[in-house]
Image (cartoon, rainbow, N blue to C red; front, side, top):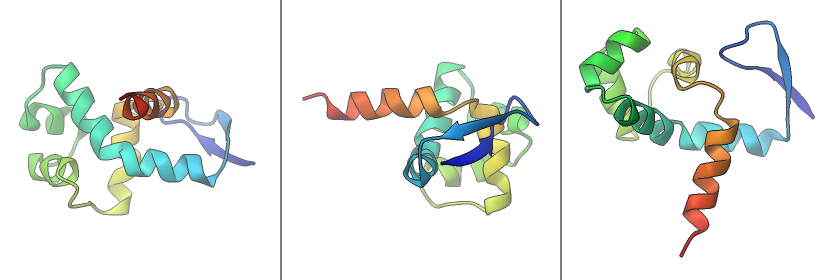
Length: 96
């Protein structure tokens, strides 16, 4: 069992199920960022301003081009606790 800090609760440790869960969050993070941006009705530029990165960074990341690892915690903070979102995404992907 590993322990990680959630983006919204600095200093509060939460147990993660496994390294596979961490890998799944990283895998789905571009989708989670895009979905949050759309759900909030934000343009790339508006989302980037709120996140604190360039609009090109958000665009590249959403397109799957990847970004520097130091930007990942910033995006996780913006998305929020991804555990429930990842579980919902997994359920949706299993529907026929």
